[in-house]
Length: 61
Image (cartoon, helix red, strand yellow):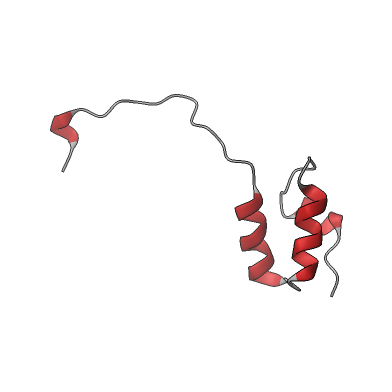
């Protein structure tokens, strides 16, 4: 089975500068099913938190 760009988009990977490399790698590794889903999640651009809430010493366990 060949992974297509449509497959990656359907799994939520946004089109961008690393899209072709991700597609090539998914096909090189012959990924499918759960392995392809895990790969796509790992390739997702990281999301920085909207705000960082400091923790207080009393909240630490």
